[in-house]
Image 1 (tube, rainbow, N blue to C red):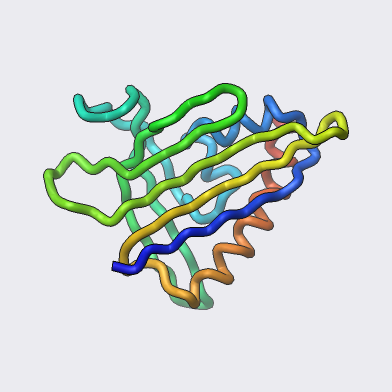
Image 2 (cartoon, rainbow, N blue to C red):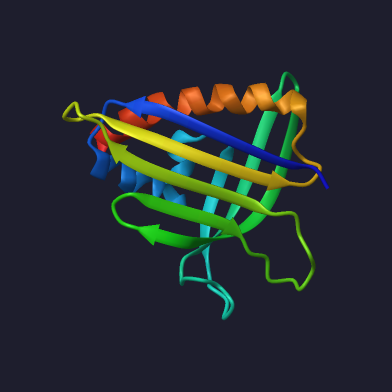
Length: 153
């Protein structure tokens, strides 16, 4: 199984606490990260590390072609106001490729500015080197959308 690890770090013109509110809740991801097309809360399972679980749909488009994948994710770490980590946690008893999304928020020396670092780890066949460029473009777009979302709420 191929394992992909990506780290993206972007400066965002927004207060760290506002950025953290958006990255700590998968409900909000479709607003600003095109990779996550849909996020719906679902019941937590006894094995879950927290009571926060979601069904999400990942979607990537290359021209007329699109790839989608539906995952059950749980928030495994919530370290307010700096870090939120989400991990795949299916309940069907089968073995699944890992998906991990780890977001770290750090204030910069400039007031009203934040460094957001996102680590994405994936093991499986959905992702390929062709999609790596698409992911990088989506992260750039996400930084701009995050700035907008922090002023709207």
